[in-house]
Image 1 (cartoon, rainbow, N blue to C red):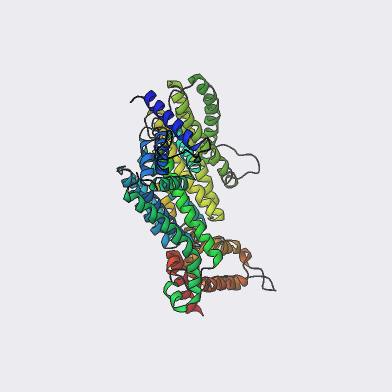
Image 2 (cartoon, rainbow, N blue to C red; image 1 turned 90 degrees about the horizontal axis):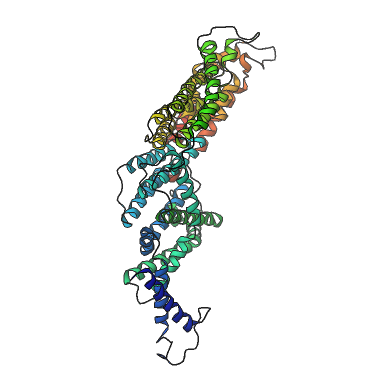
Length: 564
């Protein structure tokens, strides 16, 4: 049957349905059963309505049809993810449950892909490994900075991994990746009601004769689970408060749940269920482009003109860096020392390096191939390497004088990563097929995972205290109050005897001001900090266990046992 025949058949059914039910779709009086223009019963009308609905969805993607057909199974797994998400993350951003959540997310994704008939690709293992490592890192740190970016990183890796599963992304260019990631995020927002509309359609079909017993069973079980979950959110906290023995069973796994907490938990379950199903529905809708963006190559003369001007400025600037900063030749302006000159400008250079990366990547993607343009872009990349080296050297000198902070160590890390990225950008100038986005993701992902496991707060404390002779009171206060509890084992290892000697070694007659701003009160601040740490982590439910918390508690208790 061709398209015209299908349309005529559908129009005929619509006329029959409308003539029987009326324009509003409600049942009209049709006379005796089996009379002209009528139906024997309401089931016949429902059957035709289902046929019309199925025909209206004939053009939707194959995966979306399969998603609808397996709604009971898919929604059940998404609901399971919502429950696990709430259990793991409720008031517990960095507990031992974080690796469990990451493994559950990947396991449920595997089951969903298998149900939809999608074979797991080999390269997906790299995304899964990154997600698992970030989950483990989260359970090993107290740093809020690392916890936040671990979550963001695992989400981005999951997003990229699932896109890799549903699409052939081998030939995607950098602009195509950025465009498709943006599209899939907004598409998922547009599918936020799909979990409920698909469920309603599934139940409507399950009421008819055409629905099989399996679908009826799945729909019934799904409804039962949803009802039970809603009731448990109200009943379970009440049961915990009503019986001490019953509450004792769950005290190591659940915190004291109040009605307000039950509402938050219920919202988290709903959010996890809705987000996972909406994202899967967005992927099944096949809205992204499999092919790389092409056909938008602009005149290379435009690129040659503005990049040539920039390259001239960059060459001059790079020459100044080599002559005055690295070789220390020439004469600086009056009153400016080399140390002061070297310790300025690293943030500005970092910004220019990022701009150059975007500039070169955009020129490679947008302009026609041209030998002169490639040469100019190579010069810009070379000058960028000199700027990165200059910024790194300036920051290293600054750290040598003023010690480490989280921001300074982040700058050093980012400059290293930016240098590796610019290496890939340089290769992409001469190889149009170079997988720039995949290379960038690998460099940033691996670099961040190494940074996360390195525990920067602990490294900062160790470095600063190794330079004890130049440490000021503000440096110690930064270690105490500016860093996370990852640094507590280092603080507990401080030699307070040496500190007391430094304090007693000088000062005015009042005994308040000492070398580098030391005061006698700083010793008490250190003791108080260790007391508070030991008390804060004195008791931890199983859900909230964290390696860094345990190390901080044990180090503080050991110090208190030896010194008090």
